[in-house]
Image (cartoon, rainbow, N blue to C red):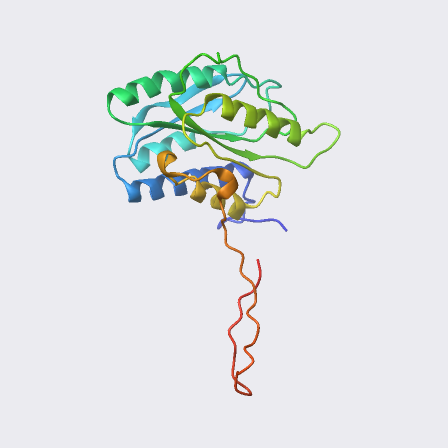
Length: 220
């Protein structure tokens, strides 16, 4: 089933990503208006899209308007992204802040690489949302996912989360972004996350009166 927007145009993966980022930003600012955000893109390497950290939603919207879905570059090196994050994390610590990087990765056939020294101090939290296509002759999402897990464990200071989806559903992406609202210093291990809660139908009680309704919740 195709999903279309208010103007009848199909909603692309990039559209959903932009909506999810704005959902995340608005929610974080509702929790604490002192949160600040900046944006970078990843082609063959990482580069700034909007370098100035800002708590203004309008600034985020302006940055997201600059995003476009380019064809895959055939290579993905995370080294520069980690360099940028490491540099910004040092500045954040001097301001009594912590830095978090949320990487939204959408390449199904390109395993990310990096040359980040193990000896470097872990100064930032690294989260990943991996949106991919189904496995095929040219796609290897499991190998890509494994490489992302290795990168996360290599650099993250606090508990970093990684979520993946090959369903192409906006609501799945939004759910992942909502879980990422959790503060890096207040997180449980990802294996202990029990969200969303399963809803099961209640069994009718034995002493229910004839004809009495028993509310039931549909399973998800």
